[in-house]
Image (tube, rainbow, N blue to C red; front, side, top):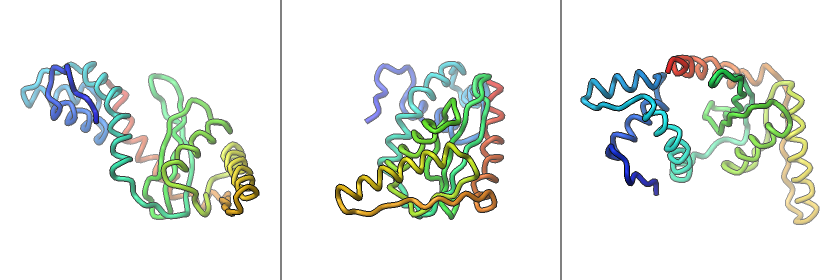
Length: 192
């Protein structure tokens, strides 16, 4: 349960403002202005603190309660975004129907970064049948390491699991085309 004790504003107001920031392409100042139109005097820095504090907790609670079944064919890719003046990489995976499987922001684009993304996604949704990706060597190396671990598991338990890798940029268009929508949403947030 997420605690809202000792907050100046009610739980419903905090959740509404955090949702506006997360769901829509709005800056903190835009949300401050919308709140002011509704008679709420909230500073944009307060909204920022709420988003930083509550967004990860809400994501964790939401994933636990509303976890969706995804297909066994994943499309995985990474793209860069500028956050606080620094380039970071957004690792994303969608299934073959376009449903988001998982995402993760990381500072580097290497094997350990790809491995941490896959560990997070696999922990949430289990092992897929196949993963389609571009020609990224780091992503392939991470999947190869996971397959080695699965092979060791097979030797110990007798349960055979394997992730097929397809490296084809044309089959990965589903996630590649979705990057522009992510960047369109993130761009106005840089104004705050």
